[in-house]
Length: 115
Image 1 (cartoon, helix red, strand yellow):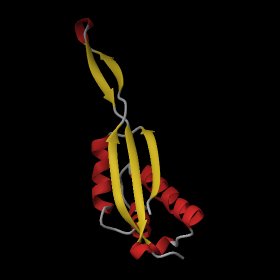
Image 2: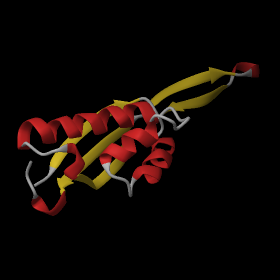
Image 3: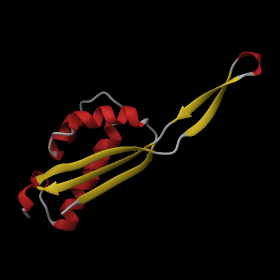
Image 4: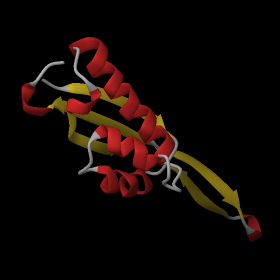
Protein backbone atom coordinates (compact mmCIF):
# COMPACT_ATOMS: atom_id res chain seq x y z
CA UNK A 1 0.00 0.00 0.00
CA UNK A 2 1.22 3.45 -0.88
CA UNK A 3 0.76 6.57 1.21
CA UNK A 4 1.11 9.74 -0.84
CA UNK A 5 1.69 13.40 -0.05
CA UNK A 6 2.42 16.14 -2.53
CA UNK A 7 3.21 19.85 -2.47
CA UNK A 8 3.09 21.90 -5.63
CA UNK A 9 4.40 25.31 -6.62
CA UNK A 10 7.00 25.51 -3.82
CA UNK A 11 9.08 28.65 -4.48
CA UNK A 12 12.50 27.02 -4.39
CA UNK A 13 14.63 25.75 -7.21
CA UNK A 14 14.31 21.99 -7.78
CA UNK A 15 18.10 21.72 -7.95
CA UNK A 16 18.44 23.14 -4.43
CA UNK A 17 15.59 21.01 -3.07
CA UNK A 18 17.18 17.84 -4.50
CA UNK A 19 20.30 18.45 -2.39
CA UNK A 20 18.28 18.08 0.80
CA UNK A 21 16.23 15.16 -0.57
CA UNK A 22 19.42 13.31 -1.44
CA UNK A 23 20.55 13.57 2.19
CA UNK A 24 17.33 12.08 3.65
CA UNK A 25 16.63 9.44 1.01
CA UNK A 26 17.94 6.43 3.01
CA UNK A 27 16.43 7.46 6.36
CA UNK A 28 13.10 6.55 7.91
CA UNK A 29 10.52 9.36 7.94
CA UNK A 30 10.93 9.94 11.70
CA UNK A 31 14.73 10.19 11.40
CA UNK A 32 14.37 12.43 8.36
CA UNK A 33 12.23 14.87 10.37
CA UNK A 34 14.86 14.94 13.11
CA UNK A 35 17.58 15.53 10.52
CA UNK A 36 15.67 18.34 8.80
CA UNK A 37 15.39 20.31 12.05
CA UNK A 38 19.13 20.96 11.92
CA UNK A 39 19.73 21.38 8.19
CA UNK A 40 20.60 24.94 7.26
CA UNK A 41 18.79 24.94 3.91
CA UNK A 42 15.57 26.68 2.89
CA UNK A 43 14.18 23.45 1.39
CA UNK A 44 14.17 21.77 4.82
CA UNK A 45 10.97 23.45 6.03
CA UNK A 46 8.66 22.52 3.11
CA UNK A 47 10.13 19.00 3.04
CA UNK A 48 9.45 18.45 6.73
CA UNK A 49 5.86 19.66 6.25
CA UNK A 50 5.30 17.22 3.39
CA UNK A 51 6.78 14.33 5.39
CA UNK A 52 4.54 15.20 8.36
CA UNK A 53 1.55 15.25 6.01
CA UNK A 54 2.45 11.81 4.62
CA UNK A 55 2.83 10.42 8.16
CA UNK A 56 -0.56 11.88 9.11
CA UNK A 57 -2.10 10.32 5.99
CA UNK A 58 -0.69 6.92 6.97
CA UNK A 59 -1.95 7.24 10.52
CA UNK A 60 -5.46 8.51 9.74
CA UNK A 61 -6.24 6.70 6.49
CA UNK A 62 -4.51 3.35 7.00
CA UNK A 63 -3.98 3.08 10.77
CA UNK A 64 -0.21 2.65 10.45
CA UNK A 65 2.25 3.65 13.15
CA UNK A 66 4.89 6.22 12.15
CA UNK A 67 7.70 3.89 13.28
CA UNK A 68 6.65 1.26 10.73
CA UNK A 69 6.99 3.47 7.67
CA UNK A 70 9.74 3.91 5.12
CA UNK A 71 10.25 6.01 2.00
CA UNK A 72 9.36 4.30 -1.23
CA UNK A 73 9.94 7.34 -3.43
CA UNK A 74 10.85 10.99 -2.97
CA UNK A 75 10.57 12.98 -6.16
CA UNK A 76 11.33 16.65 -6.82
CA UNK A 77 9.95 17.83 -10.14
CA UNK A 78 10.16 21.15 -11.87
CA UNK A 79 7.15 23.43 -11.65
CA UNK A 80 6.41 26.50 -13.75
CA UNK A 81 9.07 29.19 -13.92
CA UNK A 82 8.22 32.82 -13.17
CA UNK A 83 10.08 34.94 -15.71
CA UNK A 84 11.18 38.39 -14.62
CA UNK A 85 13.57 40.99 -16.03
CA UNK A 86 16.32 43.08 -14.45
CA UNK A 87 17.11 46.41 -16.07
CA UNK A 88 20.75 47.05 -16.92
CA UNK A 89 22.61 49.85 -18.67
CA UNK A 90 21.90 51.16 -22.16
CA UNK A 91 18.23 50.13 -22.09
CA UNK A 92 18.88 46.40 -21.94
CA UNK A 93 17.55 43.72 -19.63
CA UNK A 94 18.75 40.46 -18.13
CA UNK A 95 16.32 37.63 -17.44
CA UNK A 96 15.64 36.36 -13.92
CA UNK A 97 14.15 32.87 -13.69
CA UNK A 98 12.25 32.25 -10.46
CA UNK A 99 11.87 28.49 -10.42
CA UNK A 100 9.28 26.44 -8.56
CA UNK A 101 9.19 22.80 -7.45
CA UNK A 102 6.64 20.03 -7.17
CA UNK A 103 7.62 17.64 -4.36
CA UNK A 104 6.01 14.19 -4.15
CA UNK A 105 6.57 11.68 -1.34
CA UNK A 106 5.38 8.07 -1.32
CA UNK A 107 5.65 6.03 1.89
CA UNK A 108 5.07 2.34 2.47
CA UNK A 109 4.67 0.20 5.57
CA UNK A 110 7.52 -2.06 6.63
CA UNK A 111 6.73 -5.71 5.81
CA UNK A 112 3.09 -4.78 5.13
CA UNK A 113 2.32 -4.59 8.86
CA UNK A 114 -0.56 -2.66 10.39
CA UNK A 115 -0.68 -1.01 13.80
